[in-house]
Length: 81
Image (tube, rainbow, N blue to C red):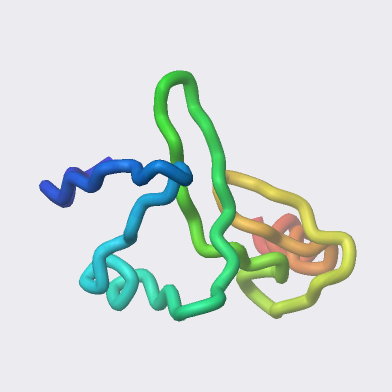
């Protein structure tokens, strides 16, 4: 994990603002869905991408090593190994 040096306060409704620089780098646009994870004492925000990272298939997708991969792509990867 890399520190950005950016600190934001939580407002009275529990909101924080993601700086424009970070949104541009991560290609997060207005109305994009953000997925929220927790890991021990950390909160992890990630742009929500429900499709396979290789083929954009949305059927039978599993979460592996932080990425979504469909069963067809998993089969192709196994064949190549």
